[in-house]
Image (tube, rainbow, N blue to C red; front, side):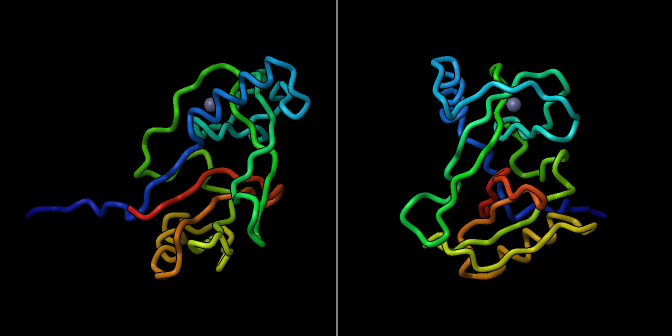
Length: 159
Ligand SMILES: [Zn+2]
């Protein structure tokens, strides 16, 4: 008997490395909207570049990121963290990041950046919600955000 692994139909898109590098440089140059903070809880400081929670005492850069660019009704800029030290960009892009299986909401957007649907990951499998949202033909991408703080976490594209 031959078994086939069911492969995902999505691709996780972590924050671009250039954005993390620029954020570290701007924090080092003293930009007032890029601040260095020390993580002081195990599940409060998600790095958008390596897609894991900072360990307590790790240094993080906090800065604003426009997940939905300006010029649209749903334009949105909000605070995100990246590690202050260089970290490896999340590479398992066919796998949902293990650190964020709880406390996320999935928002589906169309090509015009209009939010067309949203669903909270509430005890269910995030992969199933992503697949459902991507099945809508008008869905261009899905954004994972914090269900409590609203902050952008990562993007999901169709394969
Ligand atoms: Zn990181």
